[in-house]
Length: 48
View 1: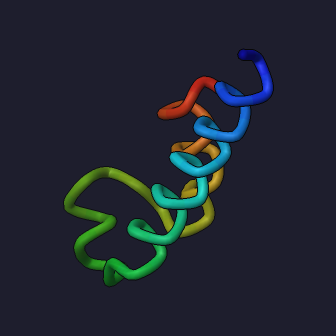
View 2: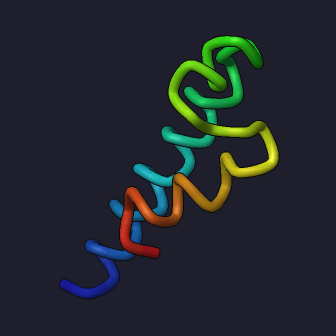
């Protein structure tokens, strides 16, 4: 059970990083996110 949850969290993390990484700097700025904050935001969003 814990392994499945960890895998799902990892997938959500990777998906979030990928989606934010595809955004332009302007789009990220509109969301209040700096490009250097993408990994932190993804960790916070997935509880990692």
